[in-house]
Image 1 (cartoon, rainbow, N blue to C red):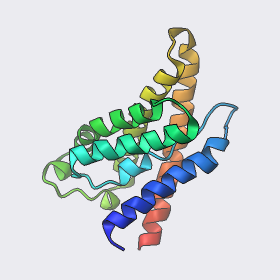
Image 2: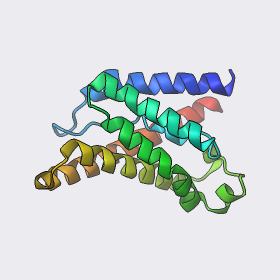
Image 3: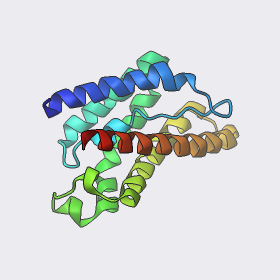
Image 4: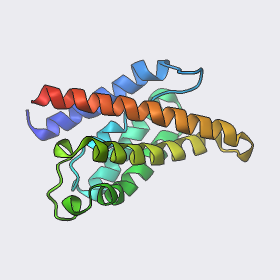
Length: 167
């Protein structure tokens, strides 16, 4: 199967997984793991920047349409995609600079660091827009920390399952 078709299936699969299954899972009464941003993690490191931003906007907008959330997922995903090249450079250094980076061949710690930074940026924007009040800063921090932890764990688990399947 060619790479474009794989990306389309990954996009649709992650949107459906998020909207039909994970949005119904409330850990501790308010924590929802958001794994749809795994799509950004799986994109090639040197993917076209404009295409990445457009795809991330469409990804977030798809989630917003299913959830009726008024654009907060589109905004959060767009911000995460905007900072993606800097996070790749920060996490993978020279491998990224010399365009020799292959995330699937990198070590667990580097992958987890990259995923954690991307998730943290995404969730910070998402929950800041959702809460949109300084009075609810504690709720913002609780959602940010707990959702980030569960999202990172699920994304890393899914990445390890996908990696084993591709071997």
